[in-house]
Image (cartoon, rainbow over the protein chains, first blue to last red):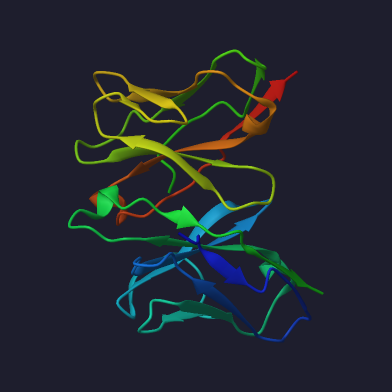
Length: 116
Length: 111
């Protein structure tokens, strides 16, 4: 079974631009979560989508947004890029069960975004 | 917010067991302990999780103390490919069932 895929793998943008990252979950998985990883802040939760609805949200500004499509694929968008947005953006998928505590998340390889 | 405490780094000789500790003294009864690892600049890899019983799979064993305030991840025969950052995560309804990663333990397996 194919794992979580993320595109593109690497991206270079300049300040003020916007960017869209894509995530395809494992087949059958309906929940997609996004994380940002930087050397200073570590791995931080951005948001989670399930059945095309945002279910949870981390503490990030409104410049960070996302959506999920009916096939469970997800995109995240960052508008008005800042230098501090340079990071590894990770997507994880899970197959929601009745108890959210036991839904193991499987991560993709990430998209490395560099903002110049 | 991370609810776990881990040593920042550890070394282990190749072929020996690697024992990675984690303190989670404020864990609630309905919260699980998860372990992930991340090899440099790759996505985190799921290892194992448990509630209160010890767990074992093909990768590792998880030992949770009876009071559930701490746990140990055991890699029975460490190899060079096990060099990675290991994250211990407490997860449950109190945290929106989300994974909050702390700083983890950087494990170096030495030949």
